[in-house]
Amino acid sequence: MSFNTISVIGLGYIGLPTAAMFASRKIKVVGVDVNKHAVNTINRGEIHIVEPDLDMIVHAAVTEGYLKATTSPEPADAFLIAVPTPFKNNDSTIPEPDLSYIKKASEAIAPVLKKGDLVILESTSPVGATEQMAEWLAAARPDLSFPQAAGEGADVNVAHCPERVLPGHVVRELVENDRVIGGMTAKCSARAVELYKTFVQGECVITNARTAEMAKLTENSCRDVQIAFANELSIICDKLDINVWELISLANRHPRINILQPGPGVGGHCIAVDPWFIVSQTPEQAQIIHTARKVNDSKPQWVIDKVKLAIADFLQANPAKTAKDVTVACYGLAFKPDIDDLRESPALNITKKIAALHSGSVIAIEPNIIKLPNSISSFNLSTFNNAKENADVHLLLVDHKEFKNQAIKSEYLIDTKGIW
Image 1 (cartoon, rainbow, N blue to C red):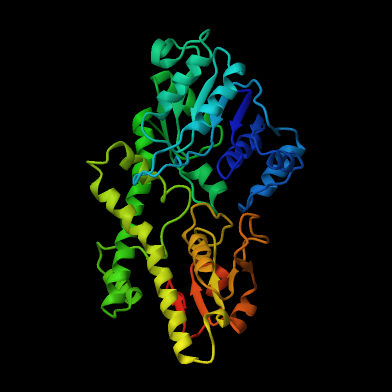
Image 2: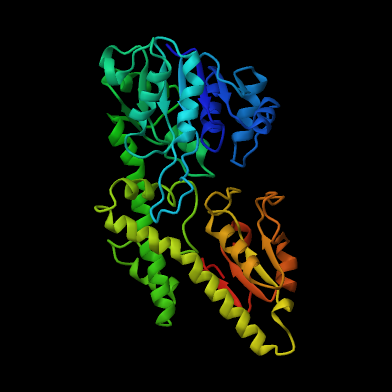
């Protein structure tokens, strides 16, 4: 085994489980993150995110001395970069990817690189990001050679290997899923396969770095287009007074039709983000992908408008009350069921906008979090029973298992997931 020490840069929802999986195979792993709270939590053998089974693996790895976290990179034989790739804060109608986190991670590991090391970019990235990372590394370490100049004989190998896991099932899918390995050279790919085969039971499929980058973007863009069809269908059915849930169930009886379920929008760190990476680079060609993004991004406002109508209907039926007397309950804040992840969550954004628009009380019911982030003060967390008894307008945003076991029956109910 040519990898005695592995370093994972970024200990979030992907980086920490990946680090833990390597450590569980009795390999020394150094996790690096700028978040001191995350570092301290991990070094206590605990985790700062919600992911089933991960807490036990991290605790065992830390206790046995195979995993430690730090805020500064240390020498290793392989470096996996799993940092965010958000959008730049500009007024462009097409969001532009922000690679500054990848650049900072590259510059941070550059001083500790040595001949024979492997650097893998796991962050979901626009096409060409791996090559750009290699350029940043080469600029920081002119004493070492990299694949873009030295080819197969490079001192440092570079590859892209996107994560392809589902939150809530990350531990299992990291092991079982196939991995796309995109090396900048054949040797880069071979060494990346050797590394991942430490714990990956799925097939490691080799391609080049650009195709590997595009593969991840394509997978999530395909889902986004399919969801956009379902969301657009739900708006059409509302206009035509048709039950969209029954309609989809009937249509899906066709042996070659599989329509997804509509919702309040699209969230998370992948499906709501990755299509823009394609659109930003090829705006003239990505017509369907761009349209799907616009459909899904507009769905939250449609939901908010439905809440406004429900409040108006309630006030018309209760003329003695004013808008300040109306309590709106929003069920679910996470971007998908049964997790605590609020990233790019349409449910959270809808709740925040309703709280900003509505003069009455807005409460949220989210069984997977105990405390709201400090940045949120416009509404409060509540219990299901309290909302059921005291709220006037009910908005179901996420189909958590806790909500499926109970039901709200109200004339003023907007159910964006069709479970009530």
